[in-house]
Amino acid sequence: MKEIRQISLMVAILLVVTAGGRGPAAASRNLTLAPPEIDIGAFFDGTQLTVSGEIPSACQAVVEVIGERVEEELMRKARRWEMWVNVGEIDIEGVPYLYYAMSSSPELLAPQSSDQPWGYPALRRAAEFKEGSRSVRTARLFDEFIKLKEDHKLYRILPGALNVFPGQQNGRSRIEGAFRFPARLPVGTCKVRLRAIRSRQVVEQQSTALQIQLVGLPAALFSLATDNALLYGFIALAIAVATGLLCGLVFSKGGKLPKGPEH
Amino acid sequence: MFFDVYLPIARHSANVILLFGIGGFVGFISGLFGVGGGFLMTPLLIMIGIPPIVAAASDSNQIIAAAASGAFAHYRMGHVDVKMGLFLAFGGLTGGTLGVRIIQWLRSLGEASFLIKITYVVILAIVGTYMFVESLQSLLKQPAAKAAVGAADGRHFYKRLAKLIPGRLHFEKSGVTVSPLLPFAIGFLVGTLAAIMGIGGGFIMVPLMFYVLRIPMHLVVGTNLFQELILCANVTVRQAVNNHAVDIVLAVLLLLGSSIGAQFGARVSRKLDADQLRLLLAAVVLLVMVKMFLGLILPPHLILDMKGG
Image (cartoon, rainbow over all chains, first blue to last red):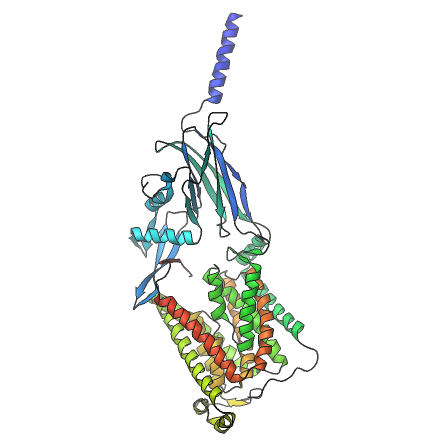
């Protein structure tokens, strides 16, 4: 009887240890998004995405929303004969179409943090610029690229905007932050990543997917425009002509209209 | 917000009332002067964040409504020469095709953007200045002096030029007898320039119809709208098929405003003297030219831009 109790106690201890214990880099799957996916409907005007989760205590955190990496074609302006004109095409690879980042501490997203795997410095290391088949690499080119993306509200960093609430019941800290996205969101899947950082080292990392999709009328019109372009074109033409003629009929008076002045 | 609508092809949202207002304003200009308004509408749409290629394509779509509305209003007033409009449109369709080829050749040289913008500024300056000076001179002349001048006005030179082109066809509505090659050639020239500059070409067509073809001004307005209707229908379908750039939601909101605006513009155009109309149009053209020129010489906000901008 005594041996059975000892074995049972050992099994119970083993169960508790294996159930509660995790490796230092393993993720607890509590990273949540609100809303869990973004539906772009007829009256979509951008949206707020709230990210919440838990990190080990006494840690700082960085949250990133990373769009798909696509090759983008850009035009470069330069001064020619005292005028600013497009002088060539620059292709950029290796960077996401959409990038938003938020940190609990402002220093984590400071430009000087050049060795960290997050933020603009990480994108700068990954970016490849090409002019034709020739690779080009200038710091100014990347800075101009960031300005362009921020102007279109497709890139944004928010140092210090992530809230950390320590002292949770399980000994961990809760984080929460909100991103305000513009209407110009790319359709597809974005990765949302939460990193817990202590002494500038990543101690824990979690990620989840954010689905962005067209729904309703925008989805139907986009599908028609891409899959049946000729029909779409004629529908656009018919609507325009019909509206124009209808307005003409509505505004015309009955009977003979007065003639205009002679010339 | 309820008044914001998502534009699925432009991938952008915009205020419904703002779009309606932009359409109404440009439609008014269209009905007043008989131009499509593309040289105003496209820059306005780009200013509110619509991608340029979608702005240009959707602009062509909404021009159809304003042109149909305005042409219909002018037709009911007896101010559309359908025969002349068909010759002009045929030339425009042919010229537009050539214009696209020229653009492709310029792009291969790497000088397309610079040459297109310079062409735009130069053409706007020439057309705007000539119209402004000529219509101002005409306005300032005494009525008796105007009557005495009669056929000896600035168009007399073009009348002699037109006589050099072989062939004769009488256009009853306009009351002119010219070679059919002449309206075809004018349509061809404007269509080529319009394809290069990415516009409807109304502000070039209107002065050419008045000065070279000697069509009375109030027939110019309606006839130009009629031929623009045909050209923009062609551009709309081609843009939808080749570039998937026509945003129906954007176009419908713009054309609702522009159809109504064009009706008011057509009515106001009847109350204005032809010289006043030309003077106003010249002023608008020159303002747009100045804006474009400043855009060329002032340092841009961004050195990089998305392709298609």
